Length: 125
Image (cartoon, rainbow, N blue to C red; front, side, top):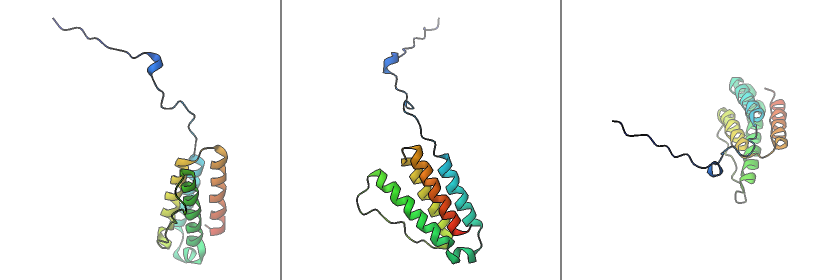
């Protein structure tokens, strides 16, 4: 004869929903960052040299600083280093995704998307 199976079910009030608070959709920001990075990667070296890489680095530094402030980092914020024009796309991606993790409101997401769009326009890519 097989032993009986007994299951203990916790009381409902003891269960915790890890998604009890609303999750912020940062997809518009990550999409904008990915689009800018892809265009930088596809851009010819001459365009990167004419200022697109510098514009991308400026954006990466701005997004990184914003993320550090939201995280409560010690002053002064660490500045993203200049790793060269061919690293600018990756720096924008990293800084944008770091910021997306710490943003708290839809308004902040929209503001970040606007920053990325303006930088992309200035970079000419």
